Image (cartoon, rainbow, N blue to C red):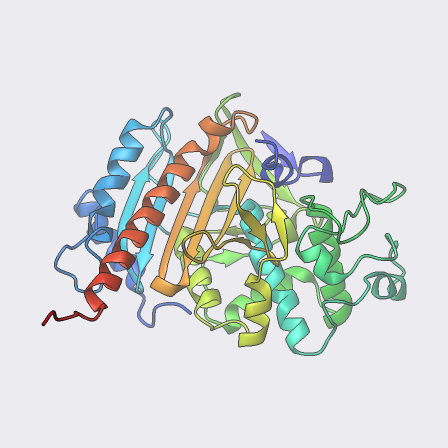
Length: 380
């Protein structure tokens, strides 16, 4: 099925979810080959950089995948300290197994990249987070929106922005409502500011920072691993327009997304001030994970540890990315099959279980480390 994506069908996950620095050496390719020869488990109990619980994460992941109520099709990659610790690749039907370099529709993972471009512009003094958007739009003869909407509110999905001709959904800044339209407007602001096409800005930004494996391109998307919509058994093809590209239309691989996450959270892409503003919790997001906030283009959880995440969903593709910068740990799940989004547990239950396993392992190792470093009190 070929999809020329319109605004009404953009990145469905964000709309419905409320209801329910990188390695200095190119280690990924070599590690992927090693993973293929060892069943996808790259854990090493004797590696001093890996905690005791985290060293067993591969076995835990394998158990979760085997017991899950629906099969997994795609690639899972877990990186810590720049080294791949786990890789799993499962093909759909008789298709070739995807690899770490297989490209998929990134869906709403794209928002993390658009947001970083906006934060770079803020660092460069191009505009301020508190600037109202309408003066920029009017200067370019583009339609205006509610006069109170700011750039920060678009980034955090708290603007209440509504399509042209409709009243704003709520007073800007007073509530959360996921909005792909908001990210489309952010791309327009970037184009106005830099006088370049948005896709060019994205690809230049990534290229200048050495992040390969992610691309922004309008039109028919070529070279992707085939995405399948499970309910209809339809293969999906995409023709991307500007209403999708900034918030859900970029393409990429597990390699590319891992490198992007590590670059972003490792201080390679933005100034310290811009990064801290991007990942600061801005507004509570109703979500099945409960205490979850949204920053600028990234979900933020501070429950037990600092976690930065995003999910993605388009028919034929669904994804999850998790970042734990304090332990230099990153998980990417890219599936080239999609389950009905209104069946949350079936569609996203596997992602939630993998997330829980990573968090439990990291917290267990953190407790062990704290206990080991605690001073011993002698008794006289």
